[in-house]
Image (cartoon, rainbow, N blue to C red; front, side, top):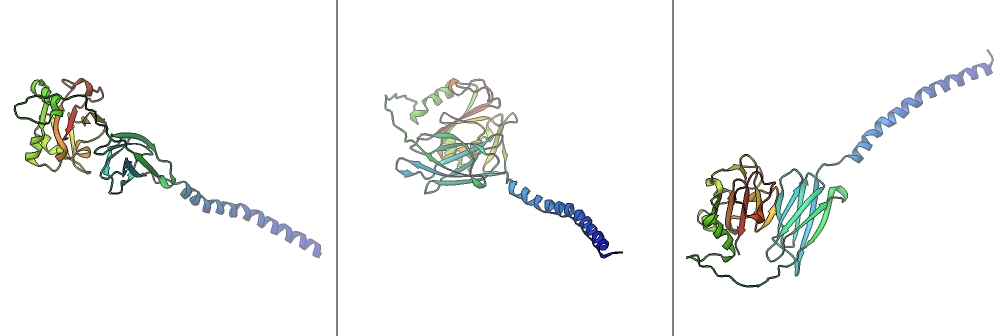
Amino acid sequence: MSSRGWRGRWRASVASVVAGLVPMISGSLRAQSAPLASDSTRQTGTYTIVGAITGLDGAVANADVLIAAAGTAPRSVRSDSAGNFTVSGLPSAELSIRVRAFGYQPRTLAVRVRGAGNVEHVTIALEPVVAELAGVNVFDRGGGGDRKLDEYYKRKARNGFAHFVDGSVFDERKPRFPSEVLRSVPGVVVSARGRVGNMVTIRGCSPLVWVDGVRLPGAQLDEVVSPDDIAAVEIYNSFAGIPAPYFDRTAACGTILVWLRS
């Protein structure tokens, strides 16, 4: 056979081998690059809020911060001496943040985590409470007491639907958590939980908690108030007898009204 014929056959053989290797190499490269693409789009599934709380004179220390995500129990922290706080492991990017601090008006705001690494930085400015002295009403209760609780004592005297716990009970028992005092209230069940404090339920579900007239949906009593701060508590096992300003049709599991000391 001539050298030209051998060369033609050799070239055809090489071309056939190369044609077979191309799809194999291409498939191998795709297989190696697939995990990298998956890693680059993988999300942690949790979110972090890094916040700073400011007031009229700068940073606000020891502010109560309540962070809630839909369908989960709220998380409670306090700002440090520089007014900063951090909450990690949040299950949703859509959050509600409520801040309370002595001498300032409570503030609630909605936050959506958009930052890199699922971290959002927020600065929350609080407005100072402006005292309004429109007038003073003096009531004789035969023993004094905190006059701002006048409506509480009026309901205690005539409302047969609620259970009333005065602040003196917390002073005498010195409980670690407010819920411990409610164990003796008929219809209230107090059970241990993994997070801070206990879980309070009425008829198998959580009642709606109000603190000084502020509605806190989804909050547990031990998460939002300390025993030393409580002046009085009202517990309503049903809709019956709930004062009109605090009536909420979503509170099918009862209502707890908490009044703080001055």
